[in-house]
Amino acid sequence: MDGCTMLDSSKFLSLHQLVRKHISHGSHVYLEGLLVNRLPMAAVHEIIRAQLRELRVVSAPNGLAIDQLVGAGAVAELEFYFLGFMTRNGFATMRRFREATETGALRVKESMGYAICMALRAGAFGIPFIPLPDFRGSDLLSVRQDYQVMQSPYGSQDTVITVPALRPDVLMLHAHSADAKGNIILDEPWTNFTLTTAQACQKVLVTVEKVVDNEVFEPQTITLPHFLVDAIAQVPYGAAPTALNHRYEVSTSHIQLYQKHAQTQEGFDEYLQDYIQSCSDHSSFIDKAGIPPPWNETKSSSEQGGSSK
Amino acid sequence: MINPAKDYSFDELIISTLARQLEDETRVFTGVASPVQMLATLLAQATHAPNLLYFTILGTINPKPHVTPFSTGDPHLFDNCENAITFPEIFDLANNGRMDVAFLGGVQIDQFGNLNMSIIGDDPEHPKVRLPGGAGGPLMIRSFRRIISWRPNHSQRSLVKQVPFITSPGWIPAAKGPRHGGPDVIVTDLCVFQFNRSTNRINLKSIHPGTELRQIKEQTGFPFAIPAKVVTTEPPSKKEIEVLATKVDPYDKRKSLLKATS
Image (tube, rainbow over all chains, first blue to last red):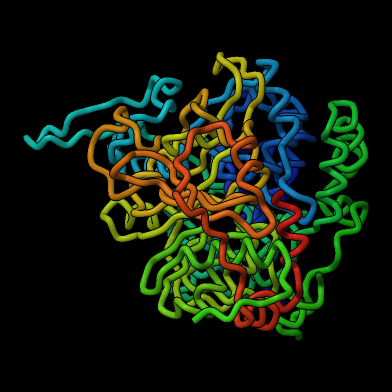
């Protein structure tokens, strides 16, 4: 990185600054990441360190992030459609989420994956609601008063279910790299739903493995154009202990350690103290948790992927 | 003709039984917590269904993972994919009748194929047990042509007469409007059930080797029809076992993976 490009200091921030500047008590936050892939875990830990409260969170199916935010008392309301994931030790039930729901400490709005995606599409398209194909018969319609049954206005017998647009205050995601202008690359095969999600949200906050400050990316490689991105923080291993394509594996042993702690609130509080509060930043978490180093980039991912398990 | 293996394990039986439910030239989707179904789909592709298109929840089509991932969200399901779309686009395709099979399960499944992935208890505000959530189920269960469920822990608690909360509606009148399909096959650790659309009942299709009919009757909470001659589930073939060990799961994760889902 020998280029001397000056990065825009209002956009390129430390993670500490990014979270405190752009997320507030009560913010409506959409967290990206799927099961064990690319959860914005560094940002989740920093939200906890910043002691943000009363957040309204919309979850992609990213149970680990949600469970930690709920256990730390940061969340007032949660919209979700699937929390938990498979590990080599079986299905990881999200205990803090489950307990907070069962005691009524957490307000939950169960949805459906496609309904949340469609609601984000509506947000991105700038329309107030969007119709989905009929799914009457599901009791989701009795717990979601905001989902309405409607006849098509175009004269057919079609019945649709309408869901209101989602326009969260903040999209928080982790990606592979940012260039000097703040264009973002997500190194996955097809990423255009991240663009839709970014268009639905008021602010887009991104942690990246790497800021390539002497380069501007080729247009066809860019996932999010710079003008949609409000803030960027460079955080190596920002998704760990979850995985990042071409970079690192799921840290199964650390997730197992978390799951053991999270069985009780006391155990969770211990984890919170040892692995989040007492770590000044994500790199000290990585050291403390003993997350293995990323793949040696000279080796092919197949050798690495095959040998690391 | 199937050349049955003499020596096989439980995991090989389940994976091959699931694989055989899939036909060639079809489009198959696995969802959020489906590593066994993933292996079954990869096995079908590598044996009798070479032109099956496999869609993962990551949006990849026909991936060739370098390792056997435990989570179907593992980025190894990006490995060597032929193509990719996004997750909501898979459901867009299904809405237009362009998807064939989805693997979709429930913590509880009832006699109509209704799935409960939401709550146990009467009060949705204060559930006795909060379950993980229905993922894409409520619409998927009718937008895909066939729903196949893998339901380990065959018991009266999981296979019930009536679910207390219908996350995803099966063959019930309340599920009004058009549908492309619905619940078809349930594979458990004891047997294979199949819905009969003309009688609207669940038929016992086959019982796994070593299982007694009595056991299935005792451990099933929903009524089901028993055919005059009860057949045994075909054991995996030598070829299926070989393909599993050499191509689909060379790192030999299937035993621990099946154990993890049970």
